[in-house]
Amino acid sequence: MKPPTNMTRIVNRTRYDVSKAELLAGDDYWDGHNFERSGRQRFLYRTPRGNYFTVNLSQWQGEQDTLEPVDIDDAVLLYEGPLSEHRVEYEAAFPDVEVMDA
Image (cartoon, rainbow, N blue to C red; front, side, top):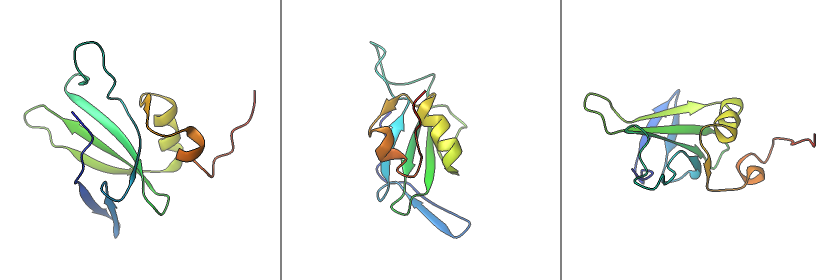
């Protein structure tokens, strides 16, 4: 599955639109056979106003694709964790997050 190019949802009077947002990361890596992970994939986006959301795609009958807003803390956890295919560098994905050296 590829990231969607046309998906919109309004949540709490805020419009989330993948065509106007930047794709930051996904779990769509090539494993030698395909890009699908058990028939599901997730992608992380940031809107021009700095809001984050995920798009969850499914190939399973009875499941629907979803678009869900996430706060910055959850977005960082997804980026640093399961969404390992980064489209942009950390600093570009989270310009307001300070990264400290260990």
